[in-house]
Length: 101
Image (cartoon, rainbow, N blue to C red):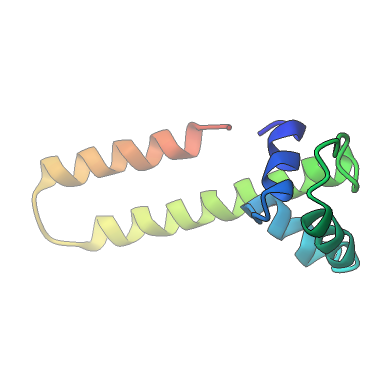
């Protein structure tokens, strides 16, 4: 997700997974984010916390998602049932892991 999309989410009062990760790792940003929501700053580019923080947060979100997908695959493998359906679900989970954006 690019910087403009994050800024748009913030202006609209939404906290996406990356913004949540930033807040969890840098709680001091909470006040700034509240100000952004209150002002609805249409010119919020670049983001107030910088590209490096965004990249680190994106990487952490990706790691969490990949871990959850791996856990889901393990649970799926342990369930009885239709092998074809299980195979389709495994393919879907593999595709999610490969997805980068």
